[in-house]
Length: 616
Image (cartoon, rainbow, N blue to C red):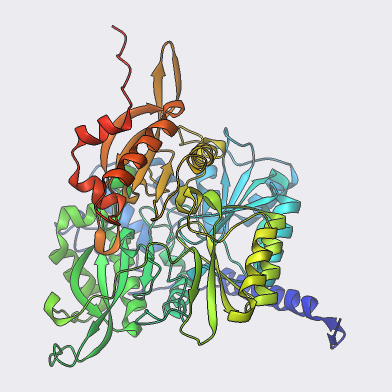
C-alpha cells in the first residue's frame, strides 16, 4: 500500500476527517453571542405579535438564563399577556441546551440517561433517549445535501458497530441515524462524529433540521442549477449562528434544482424551487436567468403543502432570506401551544402578504416579485430516478440508485457500498429523501461489475420490486410515539406482495407510526398511519389507510379509505387493490391518478376488506 509522509491513504483520510471535525467543533463552541439588531436586546420591543398587534416585550417572570435576548423577548411577549409557556419552552428558558456538555459527560460516566425535560434538551445535541421502546440513545446526524465520502461512510459503520446496534437508518431528510447507543457512550459518539466531519448539533429539538438538496446535484442532465453547494452554505450558516437554535418548534428547509429526483421541497417550511425566466418573458425588474421560487408552510402531516409567495430569488439571496424568515418565526411563533408552534400556523393567522412584508422588514429591502407567467417551472421529476441505472450529464458516467428496504443497512452493507463507491465510482455516496442512496460517477464499462458488487452486499438496484418504493419511519421498535411496528410490517407487506404480484410502474407505499407523519404517508400512492385497532377484547396494531397522494407537479393529499385496519388484514387488502389497479387502469396510468378517478366505494369493494362490526 502506497504511503505519503508515512501515512497510508486510509490513514490520511481519517486524519483529514479528524481535523475537519475538530475545526468545526471549535468554531461551533466558540461562537459569539450576537448583540444589537442581530440578536435583539433586553429592552427592545417586538412590534408584531402573534395576532398582528403591537406588543411590548417587557420582562415577565424570572430571568431566562438559558436564552439569548431575542428568544427571551419572544417568550416574554406571551408571559406579558398572561399566558403560560409550554414545558419545552420553560425548559429552554431555564437551561441552555447547547451548554450541557459537562452534564452529558457526567451522566454518561455514571451510566445514566437524561430525565424529565433534559430528555428534550439532549435532542439539541443530537441525542434522543427513546425509552420505553428502547432503553438507549438514538443519534441523528446532519448530512447537508445528503453527500458523504466513502471514508466517512466506513467510519459511521465502525461507530454503529462499536457504539450502536450494528446498523444505520436512512431518513426521509437524506440523513442517517445510529440507534441502540448505551448511556455511557452518548458523548463519545458525538465526539467520534465530529472527528468524522459530521456535526449532529441541532439535528433534533426546536431547530432547523438537516438541509436537503438534490441527490443528483451536479450530475443530473435535467437540472437547472446545482443545489448541493447552497445546501451546505445554509447548513454552515445555521451552525455558526446560535440565535438560530431554540425556535418555537422544528423547521425544515429544502432546495430543488429541477432535476430528475424530487427533493420534496413542497413539504418543507421553506422550499426553494429552481425556475427559468427566458428572454421572452423577462421584465425590467426580473432579467432572464435561473431563480429560486420561494415557497412557505409545507407540513404534510397537517395536510398542507408549501405555497409559493410570488417571490423570486437569485441563488445568492437564498441564505439571507432564509435567515430573515427564521428570525420572524423566532419572534412570532407560538411559545405556549406545541401543536400550533410550526410556521404554518403563523402563516394561517397572518396570511402570506403580512408575513412576507414582515420578512422584507427584517431583511431591510423589498423582494423581487413576479407573476407565474414570467417564469417557467422545471420538467417533472422522474418518480423512479432514485433507483436503478441512469446516465449523468458527464459523458460515459452513470449513477446507480440502490434499494434500501425501509432505509436500513447493516454495517457490513455500509462498508460494501463504500467499497463499490471507491472501486467503481468517485468515492462519494448521496443519500436521498426516499430512504435510499445513489452511487454516482460509475463508468459505462464498470456498470456490470458495480451491479454485481451491490448484489453481493445483499442489496439491489432494480426498481421492479415493491421494496424499492417502501418508505417507513422507525415505528414502535424505537419511537415512543408510534402505534405500530412500521419497518417490520412494511417489510412483511413487501415480502407478501413480491411473491404474488409483478409491478411494471413504481408504487410508493409509506408507513408512518403516528400523526407526526415522519414517513409522509399523505404523499404516498398508498399510505398507512399507525393506530390501535380493537379486535375482540384486545387492541392490536393496525393502520389508517389512505390512497392517492402525490408531490411536485402532481401534488395531492391522500384521502382516507379505511380508518382502522388491523395489520393482519393489510397484505391481502393491498394485494387486491393493486390487482384491481393493474386490471382497470388506463394504459400506464399511475396508481395515484387511478385512485383519483375511482370512488371510495369502488376501491373499498375491490379491496375485499369488510370492517368488522363493532360490539354492542
